[in-house]
Amino acid sequence: MGDALEIEVAGRPVRLTSPDKVYFPERGFTKRDVFEYYLAVGDGIMRALGNRPTTLQRFPDGVGGEMFFQKRVPTRGVPGWIETAQIAFPSGRKADELCPADLAHVAWAAQMGTIVFHPWPVRGTAVDHPDELRIDLDPQPGTDFADAAVVAGELKAVLDELGFAGWPKTSGGRGIHVYLRIRPQWTFIEARRALIALAREVERRRPDLATTNWWKEERGERVFIDYNQMARDRTIACAYSLRANARATASTPLRWDELPDVEPDDFDLRTVPERIAELGDPHAGIDDVAHDITPLLEWAERDAANGEGDKPYPPEYPKMEGEPMRVQPSRARPQADPR
Image (cartoon, rainbow, N blue to C red; front, side, top):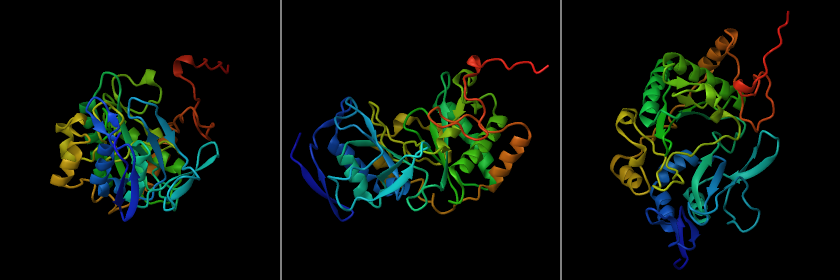
């Protein structure tokens, strides 16, 4: 497995054990390759992770071995400089999650077998107030990345009309994520309502290709705009995070004009550092503006007045105020005739 190494990252010593352990068997990428990848994309991934409570998706023996999500940093056996932030789950339970203050935190997580980083859409100083909306365009059976790109184009048109700057990236799979920095003054419930309103507007413009239906049986061959990615404790792989698939793809920031011409497999552990070295980070300006989502909340009020209220939460959530019946439509009991 190779001798352990000690590597200085952000002025801190980080120990790398078993550097030759194979993490991606199909391509022969090792633990050291993963570690060095995260150093190579350092500025970009810190733009995505910096000071955000982060869940670690760990694969201590590589993508073919055991996987688990680590939401709590151990109280023992970690460097004294590791920073954490306390977050609260929908159940009310709490956890101290890794909150990367510098690239050494990312390197330490990679040493611990982390392949995928799942940050919350908040900063450690304001854990109950999201500072970004995350729009997840998820192709359903019968659709693909190209369809998600078309929906992303419609989303951009809506954002442009609002005067909002959206930042697209590949999910690392078949989907597309678009991030929108917002002022950290709204709750998770309000941010989710804003995202539902935005998603509904895109759906109205492309009902043939976009859907906000939570129930799979109602989605059809369309791209699902997963509004529940803005629910508390729902996270997605961040920009520049590797994905746990055979090709070692990475969730990669793009320019809007690239979307029609790229494929998810274009971006992986080897190609993304080369891309940054040649083109820079397309998300370099993501923190320049934080938007006021009041217009989206006004859309949400308009929709509610027209009979389009809240949508179902994920199944592990407690029943939420104003939430519709959380049952698959085909299994719902017919309502009794009031006459």
